[in-house]
Length: 193
Image 1 (spheres, one colour):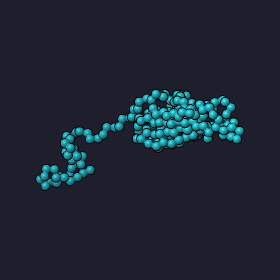
Image 2: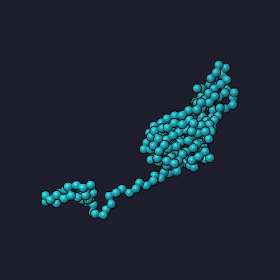
Image 3: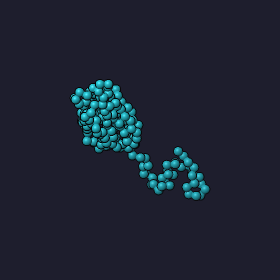
Image 4: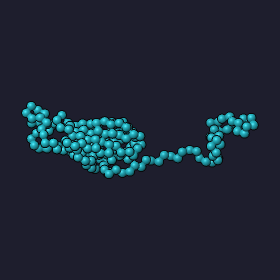
């Protein structure tokens, strides 16, 4: 871009390149490159659950019980191609029957996973299922800095056999991840719904 300027104060007007004038104003000699270097790819530390990028590698993220919730806040997505797969055990640890039917022979449980996405990143998708191969049918997209939940309901019994479950989760970035910050997932396994 060209600009009219009076550099020497003589009243003589010259037409100069704006980039040259900027160099003069900040004292840069000719030949110094003002352009920014290309942004380097973000390299995130590997979290303790890696490798977990597919159904063939699904570490156990922990155990949630009907009497104790669980929070996991040490996983991160390394880049936009990373997906995190986990399995979690949901265990019946209460010793009562919820009496969900008229004969008190039935009880129900609700498994809930709440994903909190860090700020300065894109949205993430959370999916949960009873088998890893069926992940994708029960999903929610969570915006950066927000939290959202997914639930699965189970028909249990009061027969004395525990109503334990193994569940699978997948967390995937929607768009390029721009932060190495950890996301968190809160789990609950609630009796009597």
